[in-house]
Length: 139
Image 1: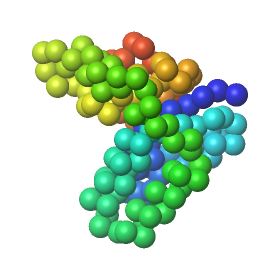
Image 2: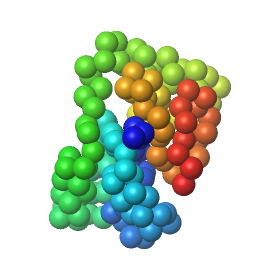
Image 3: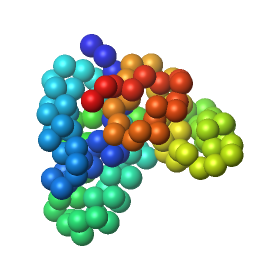
Image 4: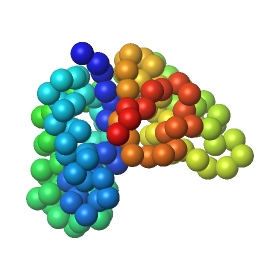
C-alpha cells in the first residue's frame, strides 16, 4: 500500500464540476482511497475551504468538501515537525530564487513528504514537476 499526499487543487476539482479535471479527480480519488493511504495537511484543509468558498460562495458545498477531507484523509499536523517553517522556507527560497514559481504551501508538501515517507504527490499543478525531491502521481 502506497502513501499519497493530496494537493488542494485536486480536491477542489472533485467538488467543482466546472473544473477541467473534475471527472479525472473523482475517478482517481475513488481508486486512491480504496487502495492506498491518503494524506493532507492542515494547510491543504485551509486552502480547499478558502478556494471553494471564494469561487462558489456556497457554504453547503464548502462544508461537504471540509467533511469529505476530514472523513477520508489522514490530516497531518505539520506544526508538529521540528522547525517546520524554517524547513519549508529553505525549499521556498531554493525554488523561487530568481522569480516566483511555487507557493509556500506547495513547498511545504516537499517537507511533509520527506518526513512522512510519502510515495507520491497527487496534483494538477504543473509546477510540481520542478521539485526533484518528490514523485508526482501520473494523472
